[in-house]
Length: 177
Image (tube, rainbow, N blue to C red; front, side, top):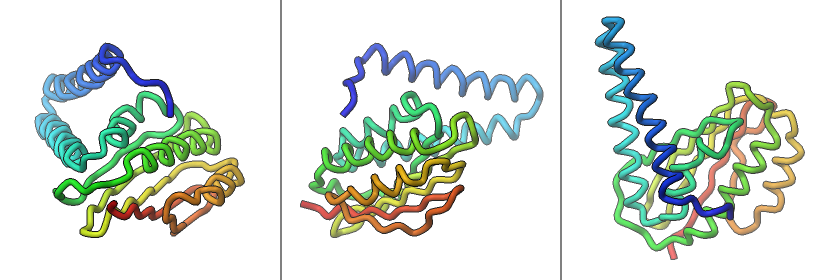
């Protein structure tokens, strides 16, 4: 795992993100684009709802990784969604977090920097565990790094749905303990 982020550092990044969002709303209002300002507000509300659902899954290390990912992974943009509210399941948070952190690191090394690289994680809680869908779109220039990483990933149940120079889709299942 990477270094632990201090509260001041987290607040500094969070404040910066909030100021960017407020400036986007204010700019659209100043340009009299009220509908776009409302859309930005709606996007913020949806993002906050997904943050709440993620924290309710009782996986604090994994949640922390996702919350801070866009501050630490410069070569791709992360978005995530939790499909439904669920009762907290007893999960192996550290196994999932360590694997996901290593995957992010591998992805940063395998993609072309400063391009439109996007990773979406969809989280689907189920009664027997949680299913994660990792969907990457962008420019993969070192597919052998990803192939090696996935080949060495023995701790999780992983299914490769799509893998090309511009797309990677994985399904990962974590059973409840």
